[in-house]
Amino acid sequence: MRNAALVCFLILIPCSLRAQDKKADWKALYDLRAGEKIELVETGMKKHVGTFSTVTDEAIQMREGPNDVGIPKENVARVTVLDKSHRLRNAFIFGAVGVGAGVGIGAATSRCSNSTDTFCGIGRSIAVSLGAAIGLAGGAGIGAAIPSHPTIYRAEPAKPNAPH
Image (cartoon, rainbow, N blue to C red; front, side, top):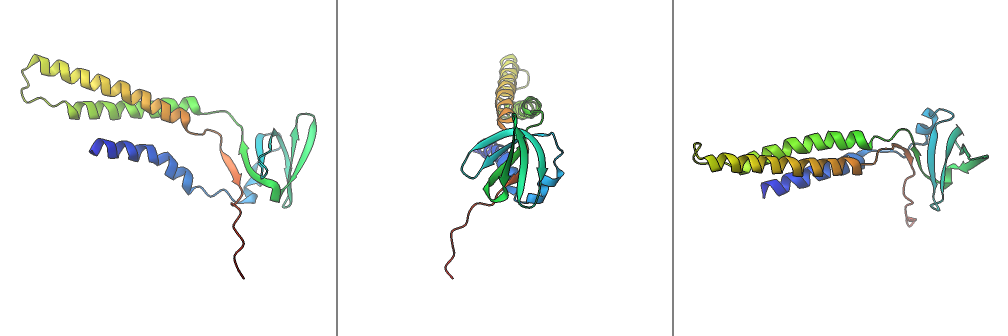
């Protein structure tokens, strides 16, 4: 039971960190540099991928292929910077953490009452190795699944009209 709770907690950490991020500030777009590769999603779910040009309080300008595209602020749902992907790095980091957790869980679940028993030592080493392998696979999978491109702007969801 304790292990299941620990696994749930570890899986929910990235979700809770992402949920705490407030990205509804249009002014964050002023930190972009001209020429940076971005992905822009409109409120109608049309996607634009290109290089950032300029931003004003009313619109964002980008170059998509040979065309210059201007999108009004009210039509922008999300802007993501498409810099280098960090999925491999995340997979290594979470994989290493998974190995540590797996070794710890394997060692804790395979206690021996008699330390001179040869089969006990072999069984414990198998449990620790198995825990390490499962932890590596799980951690690397979670690390690779975490989105690696930072979203710098996300529009507030439309709120229903409140009665006056």
